Length: 436
Image (cartoon, rainbow, N blue to C red):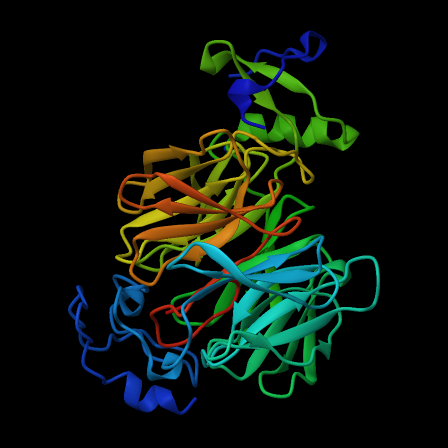
């Protein structure tokens, strides 16, 4: 809940003073239409087996329009939409904006995840409330699914930067399962007991650590991927730079009941004590900080990755949720779901906030005419469109990244982490297409 919209409870008022193709692909000349010149490989010391970092000032330099890997040759241009409550995937032809296929998958499909080598798309069916979790592979050259593989609680999935392991985010079990990227056999796990609702992640520029969000603990946890352990847990806040407010919140939150107090420094503004709910997370182009969407705080926390300390907060829209960089790496699109509730209703105050990476300010806001609930998705290969699922509206939205205008396509119930394919880039780190 945004502090400025909170209802002040008078009784609580206080006066207080927040793989193989890689060897050839990394030296390949840019394709036609490639707008960003490729720089010499940097001196960033990456983990063994991880591709180098061509431009340390922009980790997204290899995902600009036109810079496709040979691995995606023959892939059909499609948008794959997992419908959680329908147990299906809708397949959209982006050239016609029509659903051209719908097929059954496992229970409660949450995200469609490109494999590290870009040759397979995996549907993560976490089957919450049961032990029937599974992964369903999709062949991007046919847009057809293969037989599902039983897997414990795959709410989301990422890949180790060297491509050896699939990192299955077993949300219900508070752990990360590292599985062989080819066979999906379990190799080892990392327990995250202080990270209830572990779900989204991004990786450091050198691949040595990752930050995962803890949705139900209002926290972020840092994982040392080299030594295979939890480094620590951070609770971000819009009041990160006001210790007196943080102390007050810590005291009030012991009661586990949200209350609101007046903030004397904000001329009658309000401080809401509702615990945060961090969602998606993305690294800055220069690799120094991470942006973390928080659907309760209605904004984006900024966290220094190395020191693991919060250094900023950017107010966005209601229910800030998904984060996607523009193709040129200059902007960050924030999908605001339009509700602070986990199960919101249709027609909410959904929108997209456009953050300038350099200034860390919102420079544009794109509302959805008639309301909506933009959730997860990605940017089209050419950067012209931002595709997002409409979680509570049985819709998919296509935002024009120039004008902010919106097209709508009807799909199944509770569409979630859709994938736009193919995308530019050398390898995938997971989610709905976190490519580098």
